Amino acid sequence: MKPFTYDSPADAATAVRAVAADPSAVFLAGGTNLVDHLKLGIARPGRLVDVTHLTSAEITERDGVLSIGAGVRNSDLAADPRIRSRYPVLAESLLAGASGQLRNMATTGGNPLQRTRCVYFQDVTTPCNKREPGSGCSAIGGYTRYHAILGASEHCVATHPSDLAVALAALDAEVRVLGPDGERTIPFTELHRLPGDSPERDTVLAHGDLITSIDLPAPAASRQRYRKVRDRASYAFALVSVAALLRVEDGVVADARIAFGGVAHKPWRAWQAEDVLRGAPATDDTFRAAAAAELAQARPLPGNEFKVPLLTRTLVAVLRELS
Image 1 (cartoon, rainbow, N blue to C red):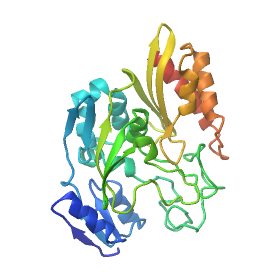
Image 2 (cartoon, helix red, strand yellow):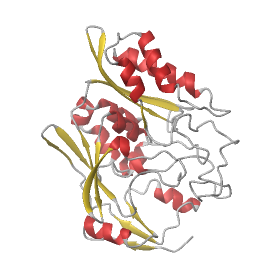
Image 3 (cartoon, one colour):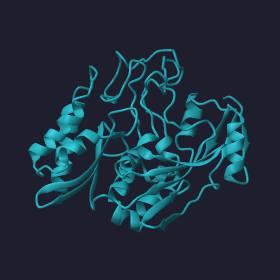
């Protein structure tokens, strides 16, 4: 194991400056993803900067916006009465995401930043552009059951693993970030990147940027659902998943917010499907048309073609239930 130093700064600003000044430094919060990568040899930092107690672990409300501190544990977030009653899609995504032990450790700020579970990324004996830029993508021409059908590139076909992130994308959440140059806010749908020519970059965050909270506006609809399809009933990553909010008035879709998981390098907001749904009758034919519009751009790989019909059926079933 590569030796590293461990720092426990007094405040978030000090932690940000410490990481920004050291290219080998990384933040440590719950550690549920980072510790795995340390063991596997994927991550080899020279310095760990502990921010576990430097960001808020509270959920506060102001002017109709619910602000979730980055230090809030996933288990506490899923159990919060305000989340369960007003943002059930968020609670469902968390409960579908991991074991109780992991939820007790994982943080709201860290969960969306977890890295792909691509088998080649996690195997240091194989080429991986995400792990070692320029080395190649072993998944192309390899095992692709869990890989992307949307937004991939010739350099990377990995998918993003977070369930929580899919729900946050559908909820139009905003991310508050503290960086070396001060604070800023990023729409959640713009936080993650598609791989393009730089698959090693998962997000738009710069080195030293620290998520301090995630803000939830009032939900667009009270009817919400997160459905995850996976190879086994518990503690498996999504083959496909759907986070949906739907408001139907007099049999017509008044509003819809939809995001997909398990199909792209980032949580995939289904903008085209939403456009098809709004103003259309809430019928299975409309729901299938919405899925077809979004998936027209799908480029499945040999071995994961099943994701297109599977995601279509899952979306139609979720929307039918909500309507």
